[in-house]
Length: 102
Image (cartoon, helix red, strand yellow):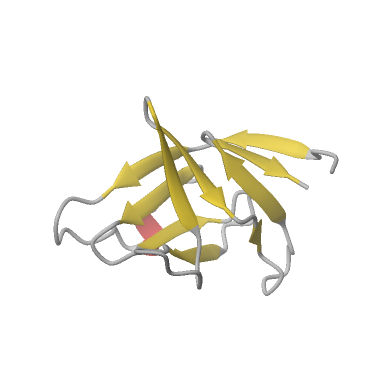
């Protein structure tokens, strides 16, 4: 698969029962993660600003995304993220803090 574009992202984790910030206050290129609630939210990485919500798998679940910690603040999501329900229809894979658009 050919990479069309790359975007560097950062991850921001909540602590304990701390809630994620309101969507309007979320920054572009930041992936907000709540391990407590098994959810991740970010503005679509294509730049359109649409909300992208990922359910994080836990204990062998297979109904969402696996969040992989590579150490040194590098994370990946698997499988790829397909925003086919929003107008941009972007599709990307986040690997070690880089979103590769395919």
